[in-house]
Length: 278
Image (tube, rainbow, N blue to C red):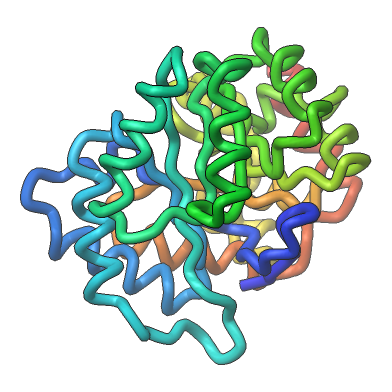
């Protein structure tokens, strides 16, 4: 796993992290999620992203963290980081949501405003929690590119340490303004899983059917999901991608994508052309 600094925070995070939407929402899923997180940790994955609206996810992660206390990843790997979200219109409700999740998870490193809900009111609260040392960093997320202007406004307040947005071969709106601005401001970038149903997964995979996978094995890519991950981290080194999976073997193959050379510029252009012309 290749590690990098997450914006101005300086945290060393793997370029492949772990999203948990749907995949960790398992009733009585303590053992299953523990297995997924332990496998990820062994592969160098050290960032896990959650939200209270993900059902059983936070309880499962909290249990796993208690079992993984003191566990080591690969030699020299940095510590686990936990991200979560709040989604409330007012600060009092957001504070209650945070305080309800904190004992479940045990700790929260990055607290994010989910899909920019109530961000103008809630962002100052998160900044206060950071100043008090109750969290280490503040972020915002937005799953729809039509809300990117608001993300940009939030970034310019100076209170936002990270953004989490969709970016993939078929949805590249973030690269026009948000990604360059994040570099300029030292804001870390988390990329939502690039092949989630929320982001037109079937249409994207259909457009990739002409890509010859056998030519990409040198990049540790064995399927189109791997292609999508490798594209993002090759074109934009320094971002962290958050694929979500409930399969141990997929955790391993996702992490392996980071261990091979980046796609060269000509292959990146070829992939973009294939998707645009399909």
